[in-house]
Structure formats: structure tokens, C-alpha cells
Image (cartoon, rainbow, N blue to C red; front, side):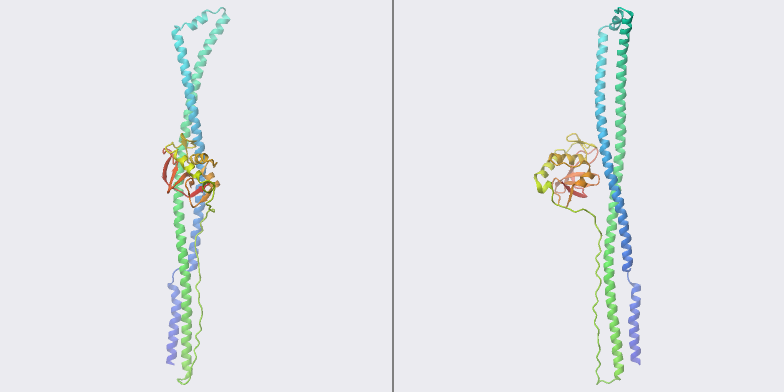
Length: 379
């Protein structure tokens, strides 16, 4: 009887320990999966915001290019108006000089030598028309020059506002990228926790199974001893059941979007020399002023104007803007000199060794710098 009480006590302790253990356990797998799902939804929302921001940056680039072209045209018109004004001024000086040398009597003589009143009126009207024409033309060109100057000033103000907006967009893009990276790291940590929780649950289940088997075996042994009535001559057979436990396997991981990559393309595999041509063309533009909408080598270039020019020298036609170049180019993971370094709203020519040549921003001429890149593109 006493032996039965001891066995019952042992069994009770084992069972109670199995009941208490889950109360002290870490968060459940289901809880962790819910946390992961919430983090993934947040990443999805952030990625949509980033996609919208990149779209805004690309549109702003196109707007800035168009505005830069308008400013360039306004500057050309202003130069032409100034030249016309100078010519008009020179013509007026010649007329004044002629009148001075003639003693300012030529007009009077012209009038008094008229043979009839109608001829006098006609000549007087002609003289008046000449003076009126001079005044009107001078005023016209002065007005034109003023209008063009005001237009240029307005366009430059608009461009400055758009450049400030571009800076703001790029800062927001960087912040979104940082937040997304942090969330993806959080998801990765949750994956590890989920895997650990599943393994812990499997170990716990195995330990519970073994404990239950041990308790059952102990109870069976005690029962056999009681049934034997202390007869040492008999023999009892104890069956130990064996079971195979297996823990669940879980593989967690985030999803990284991206298109397929290829190392091919005309630039490297088709004709390796074209990469050198592109790089040399880029080097030839170092020091050229940055001009929004600029496509004229040696005079003024913007970032995509530089890449388009360099590829044109190598006989390769590529689109005008960075977003169009991304759409048409092939993403590669093994950059070679002559490939394009792409980030939202900006492109440059890769020259090797982690360096690139770029038309960076207003006030900074074309220069060589360290690579800043989201994708490498090949045409």
C-alpha cells in the first residue's frame, strides 16, 4: 500500500510539472507568426510608399529637364534680343551723328525745298515716321528684353523650387529605405524566433512523451511488483514502448523583389571596346558645367544627358531620362566599365574600382566620385 502511495505521488509530480511548464514558456509560435504578419504588412505599405516616392522623383526629373530646356531657350532669346538692341542702338548713333555733321539742317532743307504743299506734307510725314519708327523699335526691343529677362528669372525660381522638392523627396526616400531595412531585419529576427519556438515545442513534446512513458513504465513496474506478492521466483516482463518524435522544420525568410539579372548585352560581350569608348567619352566631359536639361557636350549636361551622350559616342542609342534608361536597360550584378549606375532620379557612368563619372547637381561640374547605386544597367 505504501509503495502504491509513493508511486502515485511520483506520477502526480511528473504530471503537474508538465502542466506548469507551458505557463512559463516563451511566446507561442502563433503569436510570433502574427507579429511577423503584421511586420510584413507594414513593409508592404512602406514599399508602396517608396514606389510612389520613386515615381515622384522620376516625374520631377522629367519636369526639371523640361524646365532646364526652357531656361536655355530663354537665355538664347535674351542674347538675341540684346544683339538686336545693340544693332538698333548703333543705327540710332549713326543717325544722330549724321544729323550733327549736317548741322541738323538736313530735315529743314528737305522740307523747304519741297516744290508743292503736298510734297511738303509727304516729306514731313516721312520725317515723322522715321522718328516714330526709331522710337517704336527701340521700345519694342527694350520691352522684349525685359520680358525675356523676367521669364528667365521666373523659370530659374521655379527650377530652384523643384530642386528643393527633389532634395526633400530624396531625403524621404532614404528614410523609407532605412525603415524598410529595419522592418525586414525585424521580420528576419521573428523568423529565427519562430524556428526556435517550433524546435522548443518539439523538444517539449518529446520530453513530455518520454516523461509519460517513464511514468507509465514506473506505474506498470509497481503494479507488477504488487501483483507478484513478493514472489522472487516469478519474473515480470516490462514492455517499454518506443516512439520516434520529430520536431517540425520551419524555414522563414523575407521576399526580395527584383527583376532577373543578366551578364549579357552588347556593351561587354558583344564588343568589349565599347565600354572603353563610353568611359573615355565620360572622362572628356569632366569639368563641364551641370545644366538641367543640358545635352550639349562641352557646354552643359545633366546626369542623363551625360550618359546618353557617352553611349551615343559608342554608337548606342539609349533613352533620355533615368527612368526610361532603367526600363530599357538590363540589370546586372557584375558591373563593368561603361555600365550605368542607377539610383532614383540619377544616373552615372561606371568606370571600375567602385568609381563613377557623373553630372551630379547644379553648381557642381561633371566629376569622378565614389559609386552610389541601386542598380547597374547594361545596354
